[in-house]
Image (cartoon, rainbow, N blue to C red; front, top):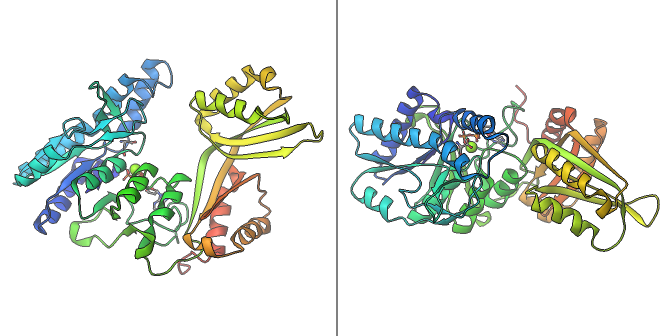
Length: 409
Ligand code: ADP
Ligand code: ASP
Ligand code: MG
């Protein structure tokens, strides 16, 4: 069982989390719980590291030493409260549970996860409460798994322990056809295929960390997304994320996913010779900048090309700086950037065997006079880049147009 930040956001909510855990125990399960920091705590800690570390220090081991502390607090508090209520329980920090990661501080990957300590605790009849988001490197330094990383802790623990299921409790009662905070008539999906959830997470639906879904798919861990905001007996079925084979039918489009916080860089007049793209993207990769939606088009002169790509808004400044420094070496004429962009994606496993989804998507946007700047696709996803001001309009129109809306209220 995993409980996110809102679910452990105050003492009353931690008490309710304990009731959820006790209810699972009463059903006869051996329970391992992982918790996030209290809502807002990780942001507060990140801001402190920026203030005192002189900017973005998210790759520094001492950044991890600071931001991992939020989860240590909630794990301890939940174990204390469970015992106060008469249940055997103990807390584990990531390293105490044996969660070892690589050295990529701030976004570390899990390298090893021995289950012995946790199993032993659960065999003794205890509820094992593990601090999410954190582990340790082989040198014994504290590491963290990237924002939203408690989801990944939860799935990794479920896989290592051979759990029947991984239940992710959050502040919505399942995964919806789009962000329910943006579109009130969005519908909860009773089931989703791993692949669909993976695409949804990777294009920006923050309900689960992308890596947690990848892990669940690799190890075949069934994941349920549920709400912790009601009492245990009020908990509905949530959303079950499982293998494609386990699903009866596939809709063509299952979800519309908005993503803000995007930016676009265009390089104009790049010499059209082998090796230029390699230079540009090596430079960005070495600077730790992730790029997406790459488009290259012929410029007016056929010895030149224009190149544009999207990236996270927070990396824009760094990318721009690096590219400007290398302007002559790369040989482009001009660099342009735009922060006022957003990505909107439609996702559905049924797209694999269904033509015309792109045409329909573009028609729906055209009817609202929304201009498409970049496009990218995968087998089960189409993403477009549009002006940020039109995000909500586009999401609502696509949600309606692909028949995902519930009965209008
Ligand atoms: P937690 O703190 O429990 O990890 P998150 O804030 O990371 O919770 O994720 C839950 C949030 O994800 C919801 O409050 C919701 O606004 C957002 N969200 C975005 N897209 C979706 C979606 N398609 N279905 C459900 N929730 C979504
Ligand atoms: N507390 C961490 C974060 O806010 C990890 C998590 O909640 O999953 O990113
Ligand atoms: Mg989260």
